[in-house]
Image (cartoon, rainbow, N blue to C red):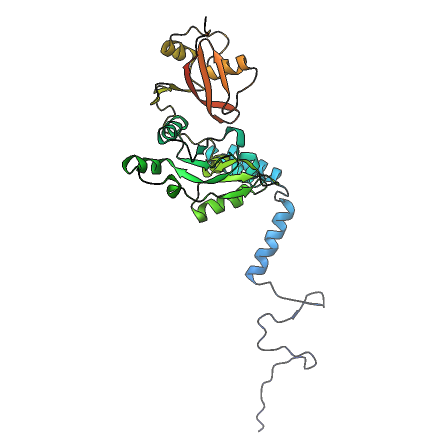
Length: 312
């Protein structure tokens, strides 16, 4: 009686490795095919098929259209859409596009008396000021408004010792890179220079952020119907550009017409022939309107004083 061993039938010419997790199996058509792909490979194939049927945006304009469509379908909030569009637009802007031009910069003279410096700081209302020595192009540092108060308590202090180093950037510097620099070096203001090294203007971190989130309101902006006319320390008035004509007439006892324009900004622009820029002065109806701040192509704040009466 012989004892035999049961041996599975196989093709010894084409052995199948035991360690192969995906062996080659004969197909029903007589050929050979591989078993199903791993799950990751199948998912990649599905993604490729989906991209073929629904191709994604190939340009920035198509991406913005896709975001706008998502907002219309209420997938994202309108405020989120505005910020996303701002981020995309900011990538194409440089410091020269968002800066305050040099002629409209509020500067302080290092040799000016303390009273004059304090009056300039109060009138402008900024927290930081470039300081020049001799000529306006010779910026020697940045003065924080709060540091100026130290001289009042200690008159022996030297103003030069209170200056912070000034940061200079080229006009071509991208806003993305500039914002990264502002965050890393903790500077909130930079002097913009042109290709010849001359001062072209200045830019703040607020100017950069407003390209993303829109206008950033300050403590003087209207809230819940509060007045948009404020009295400054020197007795002049700070008036918002969107203040109604009726409010101006009541506050200054003027008789500006309310038929053609609703706001004082529109009336001044019409009288001046165009929207005045920062630093320009317009006299209308016995009042002197000095442009303090502009935003988005319109005047945000005027400084209003009584116009000097002509001599007899």
